[in-house]
Length: 148
Image 1 (cartoon, rainbow, N blue to C red):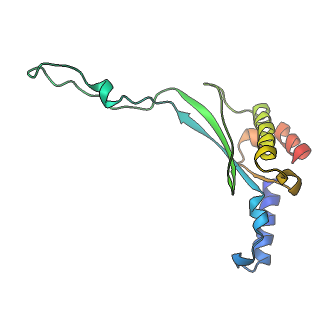
Image 2 (image 1 turned 90 degrees about the vertical axis):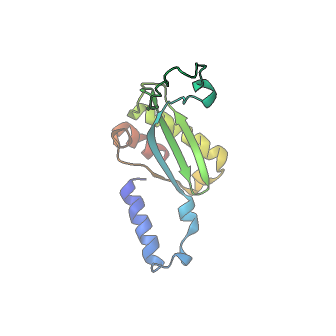
Image 3 (image 1 turned 120 degrees about the horizontal axis):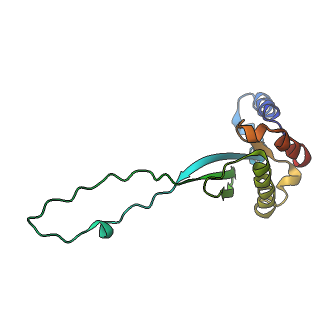
């Protein structure tokens, strides 16, 4: 389902409830699946034991360097709904998301929903993700039309 259609559906639900969320259709909220990507920085901080060195009391103090983020980072993709985590996936170092790769991730998401939330796909799922290029590409839109 397209994002604008989802927004209209949310608006209709809130408008019909008269702004009173007590009468809100909770099953609608359960059908929303949110996804996002982020960079995960790889950092292995030194322990206190590792940083200890033997030295003579009169020797100069060793200079400590500030721990900085490593140049190593990987892309992580996460999907969740109102009940918790559905899928967390990391890519190989230096690999980024393109439309074909995002469709593979969506295939894994379908499997995760079937496994963790049986029956939810038949009830309908509203996928909420940002408008990054891989999410709006023709290949991805075709996948969403076919399975969404």
